[in-house]
Length: 490
Ligand code: GDP
Ligand code: MG
Image 1 (tube, rainbow, N blue to C red):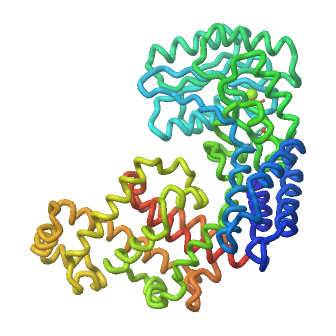
Image 2 (image 1 turned 90 degrees about the horizontal axis):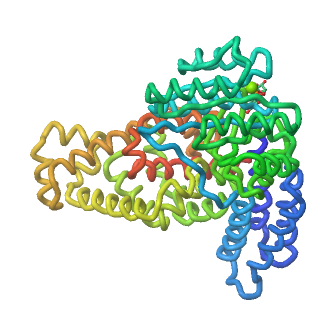
């Protein structure tokens, strides 16, 4: 994907800092030049690129800064911050309300991907358990209703449309009324487009909008026009009350960065992005994936500080799919050493900084501490057993002893053991991935698709609640190690 390309180029530029023996003006300029070239190549507006460069330079005072690692990290952080700013419209996006009718109307030029994206959004919400439906109010393009019908049928989403009615306002109103009557929560109205911004399109858009009174108007835009998106987005925003934007076709064009930053410049919140023709090629927009690897250097530094590679014993165990309660204890200690969870999690590809709010962070930290207190009451036999959970289930009085010793309920000890079993399973799976632990080096042969598969497997094994509390910390931690290894190879 194009954005990953951009991410890779930016990582490589940031990496040059780590290779330099001293960090001076020259090194900084060379790095910035590389970052800017990558952004320009992705069609980001030259003014925005210039601004980024100036902001980084003014945030950094090489003379004042302490030397070494810290200096590098501060520079990387400054670049990272500016990159996020570049694609962050700074406006909170609309979100639907559960248990209520939410009418969402789609607008945009013909061919931008409206009909495809309507189905993707409907499918997305349906899978999350919302009562969802689709309405085809495109009477302009022949075959529009058939296209929507086909998509909806495939995904088993209820739909409404007509082969004979030619007035989009009538169809839209009838459909919305019908589905509101049936208590649908997400009602998506697809409208027609034109080849360019014509008055007749805007007129029709306004009429449909007045008739159905949408809670959210989504403007769909094709990323392939790059930074030219800005004027198009502005034109639509001037005519109708565009509340959110979906940028499509970010898979196929080199101009994705330009499109996203151009939309952000109009202060329109981008809610999702389309990354392919399939109904699954769709993801919520986060500013992080754009710069997915941006801060990975700082992360690697932190992991290196832990000197995990020196822990041959652990690596050997992981290689054989073994994971004891003591290992879990030590991993928790490592996580605690690494500093604020939220910050660390934000650095991990796939976990946004919003993944863990401040409150959550404190909650996770105290949860982790509690777990460690419980393990403090375990004896060596329990901690070092190859299957600690079994030992406890065979002799339940151990659970009571540990609970008493650590001042918690037996239920808490049981929960910890369940947690541990899940982690141990995960490790077992990891050990089973061919080539992952070859020759002592954890992931010499791991490739991106294996990485993705591994992530999926791990995510599947965790129920969402666990994942959100502390499972994610460990998952992130394992990811860190693997990712570090992976990055070192490219
Ligand atoms: P509409 O005229 O705005 O309703 O656009 P359509 O939904 O009919 O889409 C136009 C074309 O773009 C179709 O061939 C879609 O398969 C394709 N398309 C839509 N979204 C994406 C995307 O995110 N990536 C790619 N590669 N193609 C897309
Ligand atoms: Mg269409």
